[in-house]
Length: 193
Image (cartoon, rainbow, N blue to C red; front, side):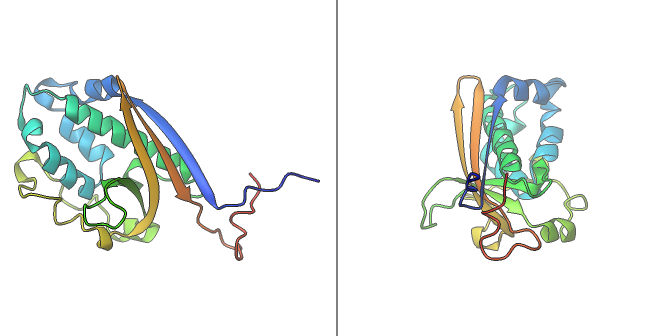
């Protein structure tokens, strides 16, 4: 009798990122000139809003301590890579995945989650044409920026856990396996590896 397939339509991914590697990438040029291009390359517009809201004072400092920024970016990098590995049915890029903190008022409480952007959303809301935030025009209020309204996000939520230890950030993702064309009922779970 052949082995039974895994009974649930789930994918799991994990990744680890060296925090000092991120520090090297964002400090290649003097006065943090590499930080903004790196942030724009890795984070979506909504994530950039969140990033600049969290780190506006540190990001503007030319000689500030970059430890909180590098830990945050390494964690986000590891989380996005873990999501990409967990979602095998699509060819995702770093900018197809958004990592956010759940709002305090959500019934599930605080925690980090991933939003895997819908392909339709990605095509119809091209971020290439959207203006990217700069340090000068970042949000200034309390709480999350207004763009990050949880119930207005388009895509599939995935569970993510991010950990930091010493010079490393690690992340694990548990994501639903979307049905493929031709799947009926629970066939997505019964696919052979």
